[in-house]
Length: 337
Image 1 (cartoon, rainbow, N blue to C red):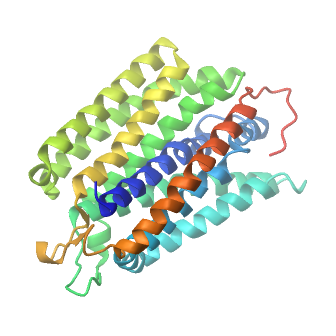
Image 2: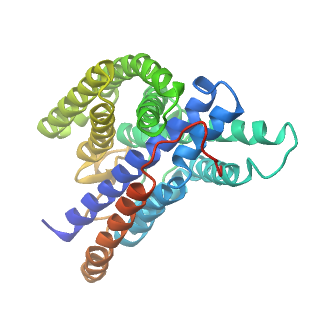
């Protein structure tokens, strides 16, 4: 494996980690309007992710840093071309973080409900926008010979990208509902399981439609047929098993396979792109690849040493924090969020 391939894989792993961990955070935020009946139940839901949400977002920051360092041309083209949607994501992430910290800091009757709405709206729109961004990258964007992207409204917003956004949003919602069944000891546990069954069926339908649209709007089946088919098969099996275990009440297994399904979905994006990192709709000659978008070999070597040294500590801290806060949340607990 070359260093370019290693860093492409590492970027993929970082995004997979982000959507696996932050995905259920988003799902919990969405469930505040579909599952919780009152402010106390919404507080319980926020408390399930209170110790973790900020650490989960570090995976996104790290992924952005890895892009900047390892693939500066990819970073420059993507972050300039998607400036407005990424700026919207940033504002939503800030609003969401502020909401967690501020929602219980004042006793005005409209204070907490207002911040709860911010949590719900931001948790819904962030995966939707990310889904639009990644699927539009698969479809192809107008990138010229200088690696500049000049996109119009329909390049960002079209049937394929919007459906990709809805699909990722549903995946996160389903993942969050299953996370709730693991984290609460309350009547919401059963309600979350029942709602997860309905959302899970929607997930399977959404994935099937997404695959059909991918056949129409992208070249992923002609570009890397074997890898794409294996990944799609893995995704479908994962979600089918997750739904089956949800029906049987096997909470840990249903959550595990939901996580594998999200991991497979994000993997599909990178498998479909490789060795490209961004597809140009103006012609294959203008595609960004792991070769023409990467840093020099020396820079990649230094970063590889740093990454291999620090990554075990990050993983260790993450695992330890989830172990420490593993206790289920009950209605009698004193919630700090």
